[in-house]
Image 1 (tube, rainbow, N blue to C red):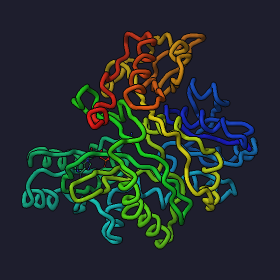
Image 2: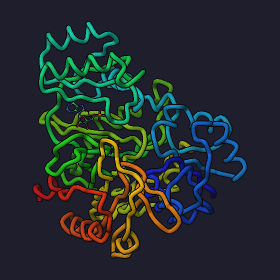
Image 3: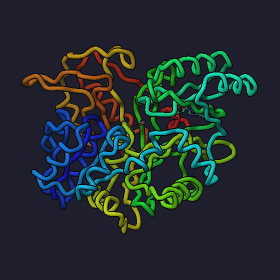
Image 4: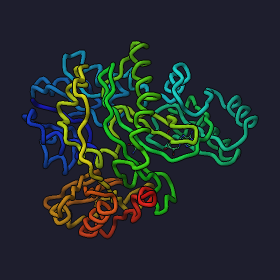
Amino acid sequence: MNVLLIGSGGREHALAISLVKSPHLTKLFIAPGNPGTAQAGENVVVDIADHSAVVNFCRLMRIELVVVGPEQPLVDGLVDTLEAAGISAFGPTKAAARLEGSKAFTKELCRRYAIPTADFERFDDRKHALDYIRARGAPLVVKADGLAAGKGVVVADTLAEAEAAIGSMFAGAFGSAGAEIVVEERLDGEEVSFFALCDGTRALPFASAQDHKRVGDGDTGPNTGGMGAYSSAPVFTPDMKARVMREIVAPTIDAMAREGTPFKGVLFAGLMLTKDGPKLIEFNTRFGDPETQVMLPRLESDLLSLMQQCARGKLTTDAVRLLDETALTVVMAADGYPGTPKKGTEIRGVEKAERMPHVIVTHAGTRRDGKRLLADGGRVLNVTALAPNLAEARRRAYAAVDAIDWPEGFCRRDIGWRALERV
Ligand code: AMP
Ligand code: GLY
């Protein structure tokens, strides 16, 4: 079958590598893709914001499944348009993507269906929000309701920080995403990401991962989209997985079906493992980046057929088969990230790193200029290694990082530290 993959990051390169392994794949197209995905399929120029252009492309190329990587097209209703045109898609409809697109929607759902999450209140005006936080006191977490590229969350240790966050959100710092805000209690514990495949009525555990959000070693400095990750997360034991499926994932899938907005695709639960048990921090309605880069190298099952089953609403597979190995990825970013990254600098040695055993290099923000590979974004490359254990995966990944010659790039040198301390 012909498949169209939407997106252009390291996540999409990792998805492309897995999709082309499928015996059911005829041809993979990626829109817009990147120099990495070009090695797995054909990059195509289709304006993904123009949903009818996507439908026309699918008809022309006889696409049987569209896999949507990032959240924006989901929240914009691309899957609705495709399904209305009779084209099968992996990913939720616009109504179901509210699990990611609106924090207030998700918090209300949790409240109605007793899904464990931080206590919260919603506000659409500054004065009531300020009165509330002054009465309640810090620490608090202030969140813009809508999509804000991961930047609309302020964990405030002091009342002054919470007041400043509320001030800037209502002053339009996140545009319409901040027209409504959610104020939450701060949860304490270890964070973990858990992914489940869903067909509208059923959820199947996929894999767990932990990422490193801060830019600097020792988890210091500003937040980023993620500087590295590993899978599985040792803290996420089989008992914890069963509990999260029972207390959080299954009730959410049931609730969404009952509300008439069944969820199909991958549900990404950002969890805090608190002393009172696992609590939901947030849902995303797509694969994580860079979590996908460490989950997929472990996947033995056929990704394409799993996705197709979800899209058709008939998830018949009993269990996702994963290698009992650990994958670890190191993100290489351009100097300046997460501020303004330096673009256009040359990267050498990627082929050398790729030839190292058990190493996969995925492209996140690169472009080609003739034979030269140039940096073209903040997070630029993901260097992933697979090994029987975390320490060895880390050693292999950093050996490959060191084979890459890119003076204007940087990476964290301590990916995996928390899990290594645990063993
Ligand atoms: P979110 O975009 O909702 O995942 O939030 C981004 C990050 O903020 C999370 O990964 C957590 O590190 C932190 N965070 C969000 N909500 C809370 C909370 N209620 N308590 C503690 N930390 C939080
Ligand atoms: N790594 C976090 C995310 O994909 O949202």
